[in-house]
Amino acid sequence: MCGRTSLFTPQSHLEARFDATATQPIEPRYNIAPREKLAVIRNDSPGTIDLLEWGLLPSWADPVEATRPINARAETVAEKPTFAEAFERRRCLVLADGFYEWADTRGGSQPYRVERTDGGPFAMAGLFERREGERGIEETVAVVTTEPNAVVEPLHHRMAVVLDPEQQRRWLSAADRSVLDTPSAGEWRAYPVSTRVNDPTNDDSGVLEEVEPATQTGLDEFV
Image (tube, rainbow, N blue to C red):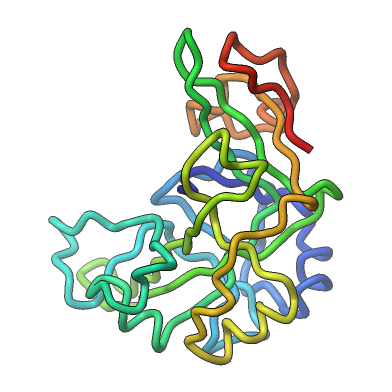
């Protein structure tokens, strides 16, 4: 799954990389958790970068009792009632420059940071919803996941769908499940980071630093 991300790439670089203008300042974030804001480019506004709350709330769902899923499985995204309408009409790119996964160890869980080998930003496939409620307009988002590549597989059985530029255009223009593939492992690496990342209030560059991994089953670094 994808349950913690980062985005500290300078706003000017993001705008140039994705040919879109931010509608509000994008502050550096090193440890973004569910129910916080993710930077997204929506199919109904491909020239802007907006900030939406992480955790999808369909228009028909009870805002009090709804679970607000943070991920949607690529294999079932077109059929599940929670995601089907958004898949057809409200697709987006979720911008990030890394995410975190936790590997089981003999002493607990060891967090790992996963990022591109060039350290650059990337776009994950996403779905968004927009609804009016007592708190005003709520815009929420979920990240689409798929089978992991060889870098992420030792850490978790799912990973975010990361789109290349051509796939980004196709995802925004049509409900095309063929773009929801597993990213190539050659462009990715993972390395162990401090358990400080477990607490989302630790939102500073220190959570990016590589540490010695806890004792585990042969998992060190994947490049």
